[in-house]
Image 1 (cartoon, rainbow, N blue to C red):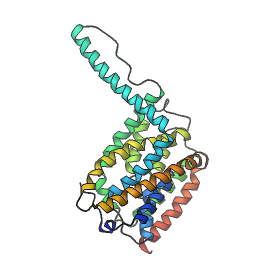
Image 2: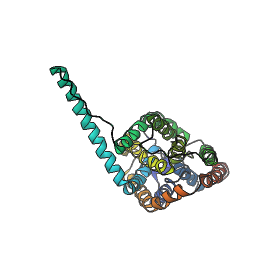
Image 3: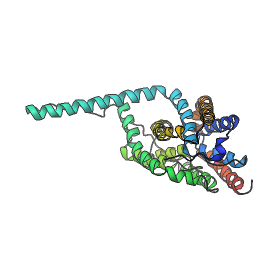
Image 4: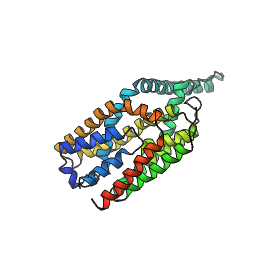
Length: 303
């Protein structure tokens, strides 16, 4: 499916793409909706909304590099455990064939054991609803970008959710060792629903994790790491649009510069923002979302 690169983005300036990349890098790691901020800035500058999904995905790829830089040890360990689980599955399959042929009753290897294998499986399970919702909502996201009120409404909804989470003192002490796969499924659903501007992905996923009894530290880590396969999957789906007739070499280069700006900004901000998310109450982010929602609604109709 074509991403419908709009006419306004055929002439996107390098500075404008870098500006959006910087906004993405700053807002991606807080529960305040990076896409909502990008759309709001477009309205403030009176530029055309919506290059389609491709540019949004590329900005997320930039911030993905920041996630890799901060959580590289966890990510490497999870990747190794995923490979180990795959090898155990293959080994068990061969063992099953051997037992059938010989009548032996050799024991199979346990696939999920140890903390990081459980962590890896939680990420895999969370990706099932995310992938299903993300793929089916692609067309709807492109159309939703043309609805002026959506970012403002999304900000207000995010603010209400964060305020409820904060006032209810949600959260517990669960880490990946105690977490259930049903919790991972619900958090994955929330990630899949957060593709619309103004609706914060990290806000929804962290709130869902806290409601499931996760500790705040693990809720933040899981929210960031579970975004990796989602962004990679979206990138694979959208990279074909670089060969679309409406995509020129200059526009592609501009998109890449926006991605780099998002990555660099994210790298320098994520360490600071992680501590801020851990220690500060969500109500302050809720108040910010309320203000951003009002501003977004104003800029959509009156700016």
